[in-house]
Length: 199
Image (tube, rainbow, N blue to C red; front, side):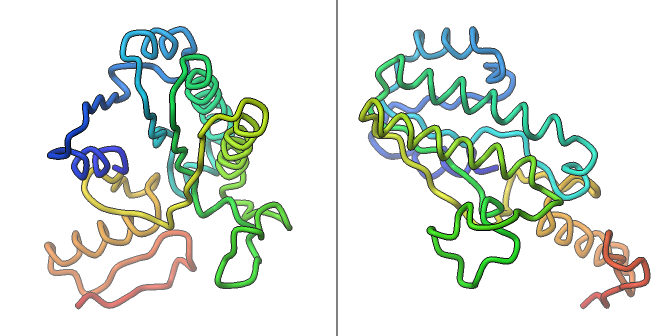
């Protein structure tokens, strides 16, 4: 979703753009990533690839969320340094911040207390990616930076009824209810009796 939005925003600008998807390169495979770097020789890398999902998916696949994301980040970020990439932007996630941190969230709240347990595996991997960028910047002077978007939704999002993020899941449920003319919508994972009327 985010990658396709970035591609849409960059199309029409005077840049040579190479977007790779899951079917082009297995980002968990370090050999494929290295071959990609050698073939494309990018000046700038925007790392938006990640194993993502909502609360349900995080609860069922914790190993996938931490290990796949750590491998993707390690391969792309370390590969960028080895292949002389001039700038790398790593997209993190707002879930990296403590569950109970003061509002509005400030950058300095990172790592000050416990994470939200329902997505800590993904959050820990994303924190590691941020720290890896900082480490390359500190040790090698690489221009590797991170940005943390808030919850996102839009075209090409995952609208799966159980494995999507909350905004996409709610939008999908309300749309489906509207199309079917339903009078109410059940909201998963809240109290099973909680319903919201459709407008």
